[in-house]
Length: 124
Image (cartoon, rainbow, N blue to C red):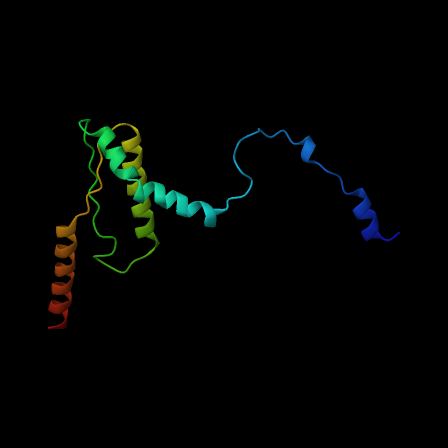
């Protein structure tokens, strides 16, 4: 027997030796099948509106969300910033705060205008 045949014969099943919990979670992600269902739940069935309505009248938490790249080129820090803001707002919503998402449109325009004026002043 050569070494390859010996390894095939020696192959053991260790799955029964692992002490893992039994769960209802699937072993595969199947994101391409699950994502449309998740998007339908969130956007078409009004999950965001339901959470806001549930927490209406409770203590308010507002985290104003400005533009990610109004004052410079976009980079990984902007993605981190957006993720952290989203996480904090979701956490507060789950804790019972009325926390609507409020984009700062006027800030976007003002920051863009200031940046444009700064470039014009430098060029002239």
